[in-house]
Image (cartoon, rainbow, N blue to C red; front, side):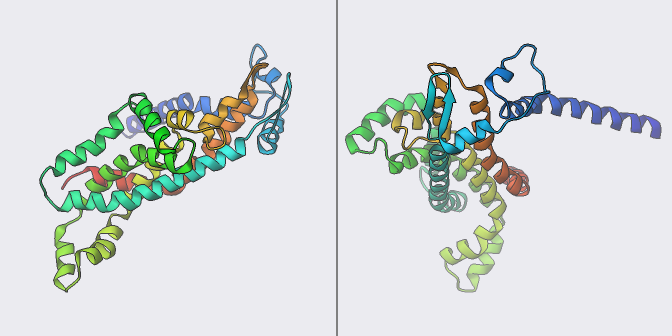
Amino acid sequence: MGSDSGWKRVLRGVLLTIVALFFLFPIFWVFLMSFQTNETILRIPPSIVFEPTLQNYVALISGKLVSNAGVLEIAFMKNLGNSLILSVVSVALSLLLGVPAAYAFARFKFRLGEDIAFTLLSFRFAPPLLVLLPLALYFQSMGLIDTYFGLIWVYQLITLPLILWIVRGYFEDISEDIEYAYRVDGNSWLRTFLKISVPLARPGIAAAMLLAFIFAWNNFVFALILASADKQPVTVGALAFVTASGIQYGQIAASIVLSVTPTLLLALYAQRYLVEGLSLGAVKG
């Protein structure tokens, strides 16, 4: 009996390893490509044995891309900074607006409350291309085209509904008796919210913040149309590696590694909050 159980554990471990290798291999291959030249990448048959080079990362950091057509000026680090500004500010603004709104939807029942909440959530359902043309015309008339303010405003369509619905579910899991006991001592709703509800909902807020940051960081369509190269994030800036002289695969791989690193580090740091927040926020007692 014990032998059968041991074989099952070994078999399960082998199968999980195979599945992990299958899904992680593309990431591993992109990482290897970032240390290769175009000639090495395009050789047939491909091989994991090569002489590594840092020239792709040097080109990205220095802003000078060497190709067959000469030296091309690129603004990858500027784009990386734009991604950081747009994602951090939009998520911070969404937290400022979304957390109190989530608490209100969770604790107070008012007319059309569910309809309003679902309308906000529907912004996540709508394909970006559906609202892109009206937004572009609207922004052009208001002078918001190619501005950080305009892009951050649009990013709320991505981040605010996500934060609102995840945090709302978490607030609903918190017992109202705890808040009631605190208010009996003479504390206001606002003080109860700040001192009791928000600390108890911290894991859910952290999970929502992480997911919203990842979605904002990965946004492509809005920034492509509503901003010029000076304001565009790294997802759009990567198009600079597709030149008339060819596609710079090594620089593209290096840019993927650098652009994924911030979200990966944030996810590793907040993974405990992510698992706890999503699980507790989704299970109703």
